Length: 142
Length: 337
Image (cartoon, rainbow over all chains, first blue to last red; front, side, top):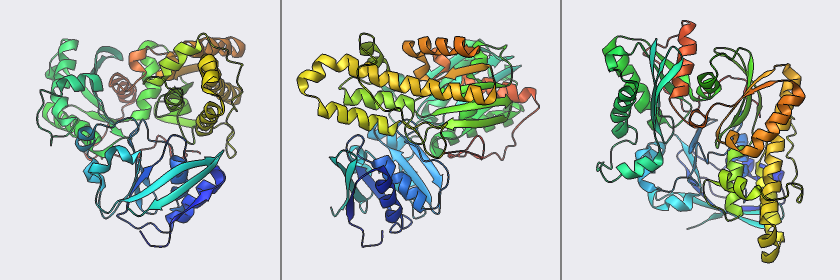
């Protein structure tokens, strides 16, 4: 990931999408992002923005039940969701490690459930509620 | 014609056999059974489906009381789904196809759902509408003929089943959330709380459930612990009512738009009793026929893949051995949203 992006507070869904679009400019192939934050804190919405920023025209939906969505955007983007499946052994057997490559962007929702499986250079992005519709999205340095 | 169906697109391995479109065996290795097997299958490095598929197919054949040599064609899911998972089923099907010298046909997972109604209602006619309401999908398709589908409506964020599950989590209920919300909503007042019916700007026929989940969360935070305790049933009933009204309102819109009178409703959410009651009202008001496939064909299964394969084979459609697994396989290229 290119340096210079640290995060922001957004006031509504549209701003969260716009922030995701800006975030997309800093992404590089091979990046892995761990998205952490409670229910309805804007994770999927932010990813919609990222995909928009990566010129992906089709719909981006939550992979909570499908587990993994793949998008053929400007770069191949792998959208993973650990909400429903937190058994690490199953993720390994389902081929999680195949997705980490120099070619792909990997974005993982509810990533706190699989931190031990993630590459060392994973970027952490934290989502939290500020007030009604307002969200704080920050890139953590750890 | 005896067709073996194989489905391994996500986290479940399934096999089924259909004889001229009628299902004679249907086996799904669910996560629960997986946990029981967990102690007996020690090789951690092996692929999820790889270690299961041979025994699942054998069980499928045993239940149908046939052997491999009786099979005349194979239908298999080749997308959308997880690459590693899809490859296991697809390559297994190709191997069988070569060894048994019989044709195989690749089926889109979503296509399987569209054909699930044929299992319970083999006399259904084209064209029909299919409202697909699972944990992963909320869509309304027009099935014009085998292989010809028009997407009229899709969720732009969360699926309805997911809205139920995450709503249940917010309300402190157990997983899976749909049946839990339904249970406590039975004695609740569906009119007590006003949740916004989600609207989608670009395509007014589309669904959006993400904002509804947020509205529930904020309603929950706004109320005191005592209020929540007293009114939990009403909150659940009002939340459920909003999801169901949204689904049926969009379905009614597509019925009006297309004039199609045969409707299939497929997916876990279709098991909701309140949903069925309300769908009955829509059926009577719109003078339509609504078909609900039985529950076992509503979730991920191979029976629907076998039947979809049968419908396509009848049309003379086969797949080449070069067919590749496609994790983001679309049913048509005009996906909206």
